[in-house]
Amino acid sequence: FIAENLILSENRTYIIEQIGDQAYHLCYGGLSTIAMGTVAYGYVKKVRFSEPLLWGLTSPVPPLARVVSFATLSLGTFLLSQVPPKVQIPVEVTQGGGTPRVQSENEVPVATPVQKGFSLQVRCPFDFTDNKDPSGPVHGIERITRHPGLWSFGLMGMGVAMLTPSVPQRAWLAMPAFVALIGGAHTDSRFRRGLGGELPEEYDNATSNIPFRAIVNGSQGNVLDVARDMADEIKPLNAAIAIGLSGLVVLRRGRGMKLPVR
Image (cartoon, rainbow, N blue to C red; front, top):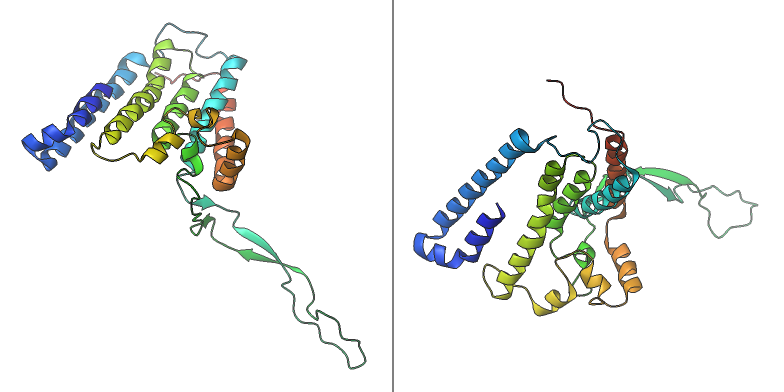
C-alpha cells in the first residue's frame, strides 16, 4: 500500500500526461482499493492472534504497555477529536434572568430594580460559530504536526498495538504510523517541489511532520508560550471526551482479550 502510493503520487504529473487526469485517479483509486483489500485479508487470515506472543491472549496487559497505550491512544484520539465542530454543554446557566420588581410609592429607588437570579438556557451541543482566526502561520493541532489526519490514525493504531500480545498483529497495527511517517514526508517533499500542491516556506519552517518536533526545537517560539496558545486554540471538551474514551478502551482491553468462539 505504501509503495503503491509513493510510486503513483511521485509520478503523478507524468502519468496524467500519458493517460489523463480522470484515468489517473481511476487507476489510483483502484490500485489503492486492491492494496487495502490484501492488507485486510492478510490481517484476518494470517495475522490476527498469531504467534509469537509476548503474553497470553487472555492474560492481563502488563502495566507499562497500558501506560504507553493510553499515551499514544489519547494523543491519536485527541488529534481526531479536533476535526468535528466544537462540543459544548447543551445547557447554559445565565444570570440576571429574573423579572423586574415592582416598587411601592414609599420605597427608596434602587440602582437595579431587576431581581437577580439564574435561568437555564438550552443550546445546541455543537458550537458551529467557533471560528477563531489564526494569529500566525500555524494554529491549533497543526502546532503538533502538519499532518494531523495521518498521525491520528497512526497513533491510535500504535495505542491498540500496545494492548496486543501477538507480535505480527502488533506490527500490522503499527503500519498506519509508518504510513503517516513516510507518506507525510513524501507529501511534504512533493509540495516543496510544487507537485500536486504547495508548502509555504513560513508554514514549513513553523511546523513538522513528526509530532511535537517543531514545538520541541523552538520553531514556534518558547515551549511554554506555545503550550498556552495551543490550549486557547483547541476544543477542550472534544479533547476531554477523546481522552476519556481512550482510558475506557485501555481499562477494558487491559484486563485481557476475549477470544471469539469458533
